[in-house]
Length: 293
Image 1 (cartoon, rainbow, N blue to C red):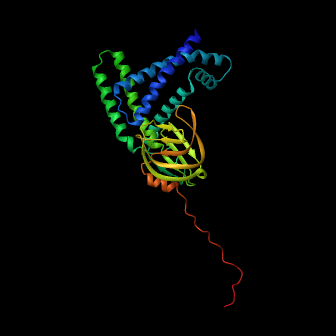
Image 2 (cartoon, one colour):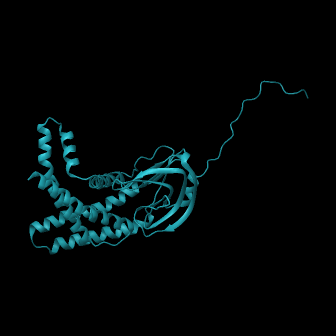
Image 3 (tube, rainbow, N blue to C red):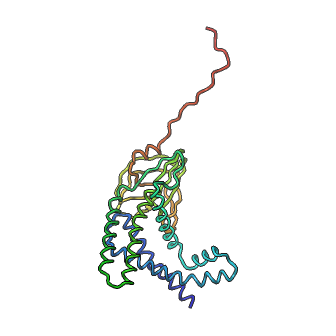
């Protein structure tokens, strides 16, 4: 019976995973999605989470009886039931929700002293707020027209959570900008979904280059080019001396030698990544007397 429950839980996750991923990619790519679809997706996610909890509880109690601590038992149960890709999506959502608090106090996530942050949210801001107001409107309308108390409550909770998640995704992008370090290193980010650090020693060239791409958020070409687009566009191209490895949002690994990404102020980003002027050091006066006049 336990084996059947585990298989059912894993199958449910693999059914929900593509839908959840598709919604995230569509939202980030500027595709219009109705609030009703978001409500249905979040309701499905909540149902699957309840199924996962029911499947993990026996595994958790078994590990506890075997002598494991609470944390170790919980992690063991999660790893047994939840695939890596799903775990990463859940972590992304939690980080996005955490970004709401960071955004509320007007802070940014890990900007070292002397580093320069570069935002990338301009192409998607209008779309995200349009999604937000549409989600609020449809949540209120559904709450008013549904007569059954239980269904009314479920849809209200799911609608509010979906609306908060839209704002959280945008907040994650605002509070986690690209960063050019004081040493010329580059940190590329997209909210809580993507994070890549590139040492300054690997950067050989940077240029402003606006490109429009209908692909997904993170796309890697066969020629070793990584496109990290916002609103289906990139504005900066960075060439590297050798490929760098990165982790995609769902856990797959890749490598690229050319990086293309969007920065709202592309020229400033390229200038920050360019060669730094070298100031000649001042030498102490010589103690040897000069030639006689």
